[in-house]
Amino acid sequence: MTSPASFKDIALATAHEAGKLLARGAQMKVNASTDDDVKMQADVDSETLVRERLKSTGLPIIGEELGGDATLFDRDELYWVVDPLDGTYNYLRGQPCTCVSLGLMRGQEPVLGVIYNFTADKTYLGIVGEGTYINGKRHTPAWVSDIKDACIMTGFPALADKSAPAMAIFMGQVSRYKKIRMIGSAALALAYVGEGVADTYYESGTNLWDVAAGLAIIKAAGGHYRLVPSGKRPLNYDLWASAKEEWTR
Image (cartoon, rainbow, N blue to C red; front, top):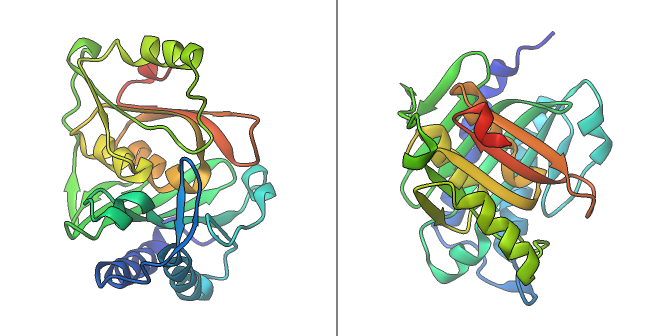
């Protein structure tokens, strides 16, 4: 059986190639814009590049723009879950919190993740069972030990319920933390947790391609996560990912 770690080099090379495309200023054309989301040609171009590069692995791919087989999540086989431009609105506006996110999963389990923050030329790699690396160097996160000192990252995806009752529940969940941060990229926020500059990520109604790579990085670093199907559409979840298992409840 092929080891998931054997896909590390192609994942890193692919993420960097997609990042170079985006850093050069790929197609800035807006293909669609709704009240709370935007889709760009850069999303499509970067995913097309990623799929072409990963074709040699022979593994199926699920991506944000070009889809995939959602039943892979419930099967015991390797597959890629990719979001080659996470933080599209940030990218459109020239904000720095955007990245390429490539995850390798086996069924419901993340096994390898690469997140490339091309605006900072910073690469996060997580191999479950081996460890987490930043720019090629082994990294151990310095998470805090008490929730009263902790930082939670969060966000509001397009499918999030932003009604007053939902916001009240949300505030009850995040107000346990010392600080709350929102950067507009679920993948990069999860990378921050894996790095240890934050301690928890929470989001309601996020998609698997937004978080697969980050979950691998956090799990490889010794953290924990909980995915609960949202019921809104396939591969959409409520997610807690954290330094401590008790903080995912």
